[in-house]
Image (cartoon, rainbow, N blue to C red; front, side):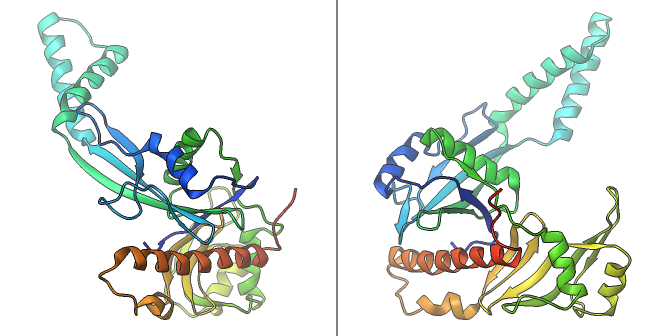
Length: 302
């Protein structure tokens, strides 16, 4: 349940639904497995697991949601080979050239023919809405996967206005200055990992891992004009993560001390453990998000 990525969105208006109303709205988007000729299916499943029909878990004004994604695996090489064989057979039997438009139609026919026999791959994406602080957090490093979840949520709710977080200071410039001028925020410690990029549009990328930071090796790159676009840090001895220029937090790890705070709860009551862990995790993430905004000059109102 503990998030491995944190992609934040700012709600532009208050969220007025209670847990029961939200659950009812999401029922129309409940997960249904792929049909025989369907390549992709997405829908809501219970945060409590397969034994529950509840699609929302509520704690302290925060609503935990889980999106399931099922995708049929149909290798492109297989489709290409079958298409090539089909085209060659038509051209040989009918003595004519098969052009692009017809090839696209043949390809669609092949895909539909193969889908019922294709293997499926499933994954889940978790998210929660914090109605007190007006943030939403999605556990996904992929902006496309996060948008997939948001699109279904908008469809089920009718509307769900939110924006990516806006800050006053450039994250790239701020992270670069932290290392160049040795002025890291007091509650952040460097973990020795970073990604640097040259200013030019097609500029090269330098990846560093497990090196001394700040230090001479990184300084040379920064003084030559490269800038920090990702930076590995630890926050307040509670979490470690890679802070990126888009403000997404990747490779999130919660400290052992934080995770162990609920160890006294019995494993025989998984629902109570989920509730306690979610409240612990979400409180830390919401507090961290306020710090992220502070590190980059506060939230922009423009």
